[in-house]
Length: 121
Image (cartoon, rainbow, N blue to C red; front, side, top):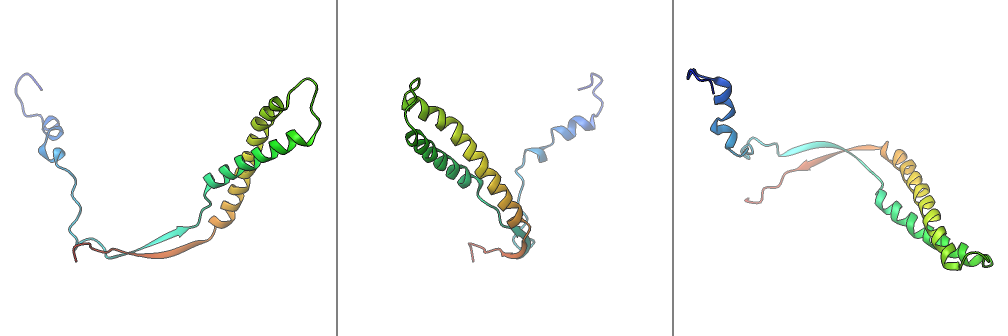
C-alpha cells in the first residue's frame, strides 16, 4: 500500500469480498433443459494394454518350454528374459492395433440430445 494513503484501485480489486464468494450456478430457469452434443466412440486403450501383457506372458511361457534347455541358462532365466522383452513387444503391438482401430472408429461422430432431469421435481 502506498505510504501517502492514496486510494489504490488495484489493491482494492485484489481484496474485494467478491473474490471470496463461491461461484454460484445459474438458477434452474436459466439453464437449458436440453443440450445437443457431438459424441464419438473410442477404444479403451487400457484393455488392449492388459491384453498385450497377458498374450506376451503366455507367449513367453510357450517359447521357454517349446525349445530344449540352453546349457548356459536355466529355464527360469530364459523365462525372465522372454517375459521382459516379449511382453513389452506385445504391449506395443496391441497398442498400435488399438490406435489404428481408434482412428477408424473415431471418424464416426454422432449427435445426441442430453436432457436435464431435476431431482426436486
